[in-house]
Length: 222
Ligand code: 2BA
Image 1 (cartoon, rainbow, N blue to C red):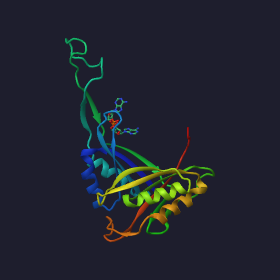
Image 2: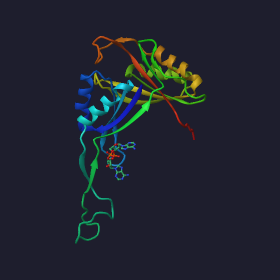
Image 3: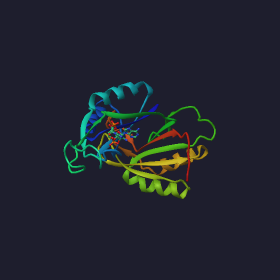
Image 4: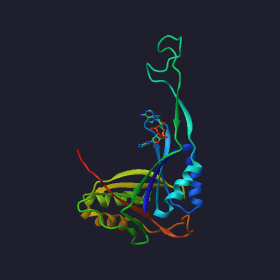
């Protein structure tokens, strides 16, 4: 399985999510800001089977459009010919791409409520740090965070939105040594409440949290 991280322009996010819902793909939306333009964009997390990756990429390509943006020139750049230096500056044209997409190998995917990992790939090389992204309803996140902190894990919370229900949820980001991975997953599972909620695939399918696990190539704490 893969975790696709796609950064798209805010204008394209709504129609793209509608299409993902129509074709039965679950997504998590993070409201983000481009580092260069400092304008809002949207980052989507999409976990899919390997054989659906091309379909996801194709869908993004169909729904997301490159656009030209204009920003004010930086000091000392782009002055109009004939004007006093810096008096009036010409806007700079920037072409923003349709989407920026990262496809990552998932080590494990757990759907809480299904009680079991629905996907586990072979064990990582010994000692490989693991990164957990756990998406859950906002009202479970405090309880889960407290239990993880009590067990001496460190956690970062991102406020996110479910792509289907468009309801606020939370994504916890947690790095752990591989030998403590199962205990972290168990803590998340046991502190999430089980709910009956609709999903794109099947209205009424039970759902609580989705836990994505990725290998970390390098971990430093400075
Ligand atoms: P922004 O950082 O706001 O960048 C918007 C657009 O500005 C970029 O479009 C690119 O055309 C230009 N740009 C970005 N950084 C620049 C720089 N240092 N010098 C000159 N021009 C620059 P895209 O490349 O299509 O990127 C769209 C958005 O995707 C970015 O918004 C950022 O949020 C994200 N993104 C792109 N590449 C990324 C990467 N390698 N890692 C993380 N995020 C990335």
